[in-house]
Length: 155
Image 1 (cartoon, rainbow, N blue to C red):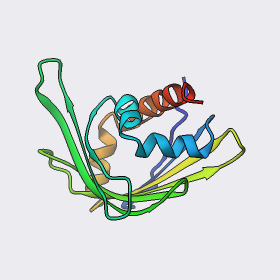
Image 2 (image 1 turned 90 degrees about the vertical axis):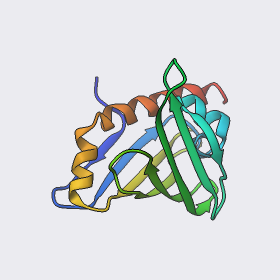
Image 3 (image 1 turned 180 degrees about the vertical axis):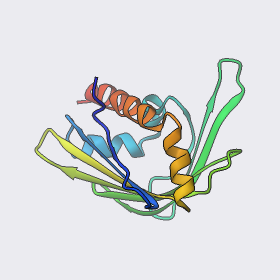
Image 4 (image 1 turned 45 degrees about the vertical axis):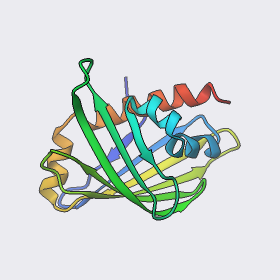
């Protein structure tokens, strides 16, 4: 099955361009990124903090069935325009990856469909290459599939 989330990675660049179209109005797609209860569901993580505003911050944490934290990430929201864009940093804790800068743009295609475009900028070409060696594309596509499924129920 083909991934609906597309990752465009040109050689010798510091960034990735990620696109995904959803069968959701842009307002619901945006809500999936800013409402803690919805984020927790589709990302399968605990939302410690999510201040969905300019100069806000966020923190997520995922634990294994025994309660051991296996993933923790945080960042700062630098720009926030409802239903249009979020600019934020993304930093994973206890992992040898430098913080990255993410530009998320939300676009209405029709009244019932929308598009998410993400540009992620890495510190170095090596950091980007290391990210791409992980099951990053698979995981992101799977998360976006869950987002579609969960948010469709909110319609």
